[in-house]
Amino acid sequence: MNDNHDDWGQATRAVRVGHRRTAEGENAEPIFTTSSYVFRSAAEAAARFSGDEPGNIYSRFTNPTVRAFEERLAALEGGESCVATASGMSAILAVCLGLLKAGDHIVSSRSIFGTSLMMFTKYLSKFGIDTSFVPLAETEAWENAIRPETRLMFLETPSNPLTEIADIAALADLAHANDCLLAVDNCFCTPVLQQPLALGADLVIHSATKYLDGQGRCVGGAVVGDRKTVGEEVFGVLRTAGPTMSPFNAWVFLKGLETLKIRMAAHSENAMVLANWLKACTTVERVHYPGLAEHPQFELAGRQQSAAGGIVSFEVRGGREQAWRLIDSMRMLSITANLGDTKTTITHPATTTHGRLSDDEKALSGITEGLIRIAVGLEDPEDIINDLAPVLDVP
Ligand SMILES: *Cc1c(COP(=O)(O)O)cnc(C)c1O
Image (cartoon, rainbow, N blue to C red):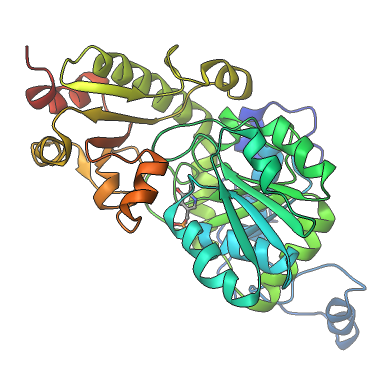
């Protein structure tokens, strides 16, 4: 069942796609905890191994629960193919291993997840793949950084933690004019708020750990794109190198996808309330949130995203001392760098997620000592505000 879901809306796809009901008649998706699969005959085994006949062989390659998650996420992103991975980082690694070779060049946004930056600079560089970093929102900077050997452009939008927005359609055009692929890490928006493939991107990357799970339970990742690039080339890496998603985690993410649409709407609503409240605090110098009219790419965000998302950052007056004082005063908010959880989290990027950057790199990326990032959860927004108010809301 569910093979033809083209005319289903996104909420329906999130609930229904991917589950092939077994003879037991189960309504919820089963978890297939099996490492291998049994063949009916030697000839069938041979046909499966040679690829003449489709079907499961071994759970490093395929597993029915993992496949259900892959099909559901592909349907939500509007992609032909999805490969699930053990983590968001292994999704990025599988893309690079599958699609790049020594001598190739990457142009990446400077404002990406710290570990992604490390993957490019510390590890891919060892294998002769060079990366140039550019300011996310400056399309000309991307153009100037492209070389004849550039094969991949990589970005996250909105960026972490400053919520800058890239023009995905413009960058996709630029990529294709230069024989490059555009990969978008869609972790912050999820397909509910933004569909990069529809805007021209070639690959969507996810850390399923964040909003796809949505309750901070499991680590996982995924790549979505066309049948050849993802279904063959990226899948080939997974099958060979083995950063496979476990069936249990796939099941958790499947159930997460079912509530993704209502969760993202609620995260965005709460974040908007918080951003407006922060704006009115005299102790707050600046608020970064794409839902605010004063955000430099407010209009682009409105065109590209269906809501502004759950991440709000702001600068407090008084630098690190005041930022840490605020964090240490929390009674409810969780002091953790994770995001995409029902629980609101608060973090000081300059000394945690971006702590390894030099002072110059921090200045370039706009990571000031007074900057705080909040990943707004699903509590009552008044309670989130009540936690912040004693330090921030002073007359
Ligand atoms: C967390 C994160 C990753 C890495 O994902 P893991 O699941 O932790 O490996 C990549 N990109 C972004 C934007 C993230 O927030």
